[in-house]
Amino acid sequence: AGHLIGPFEVESALMEHPAVAEAGVIGIPDEVAGEVVKAFVTLHSGYQWSEELEKELMAWARVRLGASIAPRQIAYEPQLPLTRSGKIMRRLLKAWELGLPTGDLSTLEGEDT
Image (cartoon, rainbow, N blue to C red):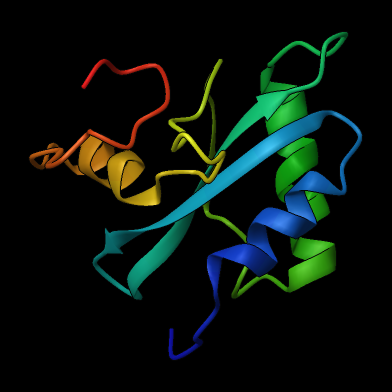
């Protein structure tokens, strides 16, 4: 609580792990802290998602970022939503996570306009 952190720092720390190909983070509501970090990751080929890998990534992030900034949850996604220019659409991750309207998807890679 009380810490301001940009998504890039958390995503970069997770992507330093050899298993992580891409990472996208969002803030999700938390009764105690107000908002906490949730990360979504894709994996490099040769790695498989497991509870052990999730725990390893949580520990990895805590060491690099500190317990107050590290993600409280990490979820595996086979593919993160990207814009046509290759940027992660964090607002779409947040909409999916919180059940909110997705809004304009015209810049989503792979979507027909």
